[in-house]
Length: 70
Image (spheres, rainbow, N blue to C red):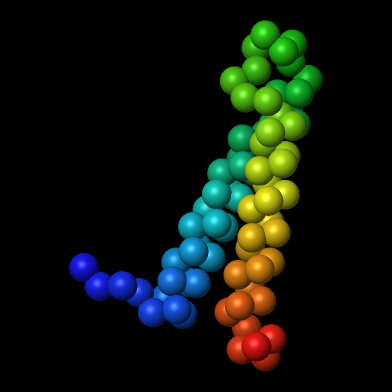
């Protein structure tokens, strides 16, 4: 097993985080918030916090990927 280079690692991380953001967007957490709490599969506030964190991580990855920012 080889260790990916810095660029490969950032590319793979970027793809993985983008996938997670897409999954969160498709979860329609805002619709779950309209249901009674007893019917929630997950807390919509937790989903929103996770999305905010992932978007921040995406921004940081994009800064590292752009050679003009170094």
